[in-house]
Length: 281
Image 1 (cartoon, rainbow, N blue to C red):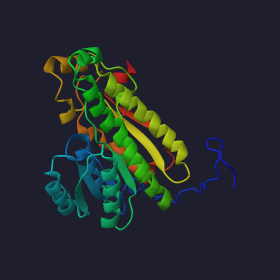
Image 2: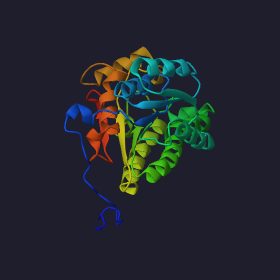
Image 3: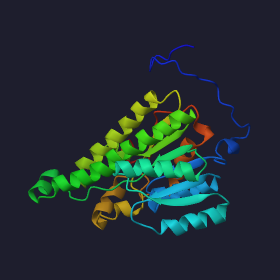
Image 4: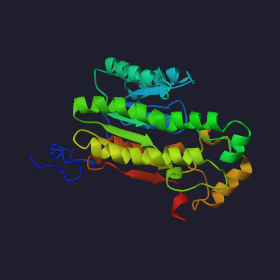
């Protein structure tokens, strides 16, 4: 068996047996998907979309236990299995235990993992935050969730995918991993998201023999994570966004569905930017 130039590893590369109809390629029927940060915003929209596409879903939350009832409603409405799990992604042991519990509850398999949980930087310029005595605490909070949390999810789900011989990891990055946003100052968030994008590319090479890894980079989306910004700041965002508005979480789900489905079996190490054109100018 030939070795790949990229990894030097002997890995099987059979052509996938794809459905003949394009809509069936995007179906998630028969798949089990985990979505972290699924209580609202992007994660909530992805959970609904995946259930609509036929996936059984394990939705994770940190503090909003209303997701327990939401999971029941999704299961009943779309005829899938759905269960909510309380898991702070910055807790390594909890992440590992939750993944094992999902495996136990869903027949020993996870096909798609969406690492979506994240928090915003809310303290402005780093030097000013340091002067206020909040820089270190805020830096740790953002980095532990937005970067370390992705790492914890990745390493434990990677072991599952390797055992299965297949899987798709989809990570929520940000256009902030590509550009420096203005007028708000958020060095920590930008650095964490840039790191997540490169982490995903690196994992895509490491896991090429058994799983795919990709990222989605949203722009300004109307979700709770952007509520920290004042109206005048948001108006400046819109002036710099060619489409002139914030996006809706539902406008992102096509990218997540593509990356989680068999429509993307030759896509790995890719970042899909959905930002209304912000990073194009």
